[in-house]
Length: 84
Image (cartoon, rainbow, N blue to C red):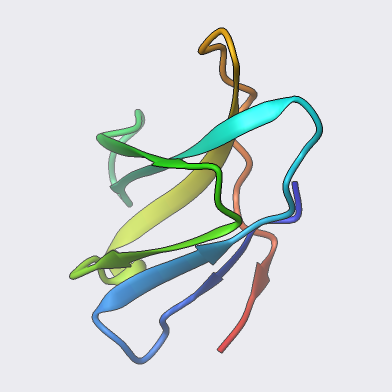
């Protein structure tokens, strides 16, 4: 929910999001801009922001999914704003 992205002038992608009720953690997804499916993912735990070092935001699409206690994931939410 309310995912934003940063890292425009850095070799890292920074993502922030609002925590949602019932989530015990979050999973970040990213894919090449020419890929139709998610190429990569990383479970980042119960946090509301994370930096993917060495990942340039111009080369990928990003999304975040909430994960519940049973391991089920929400729909992946794309960033809807940019921060510096």
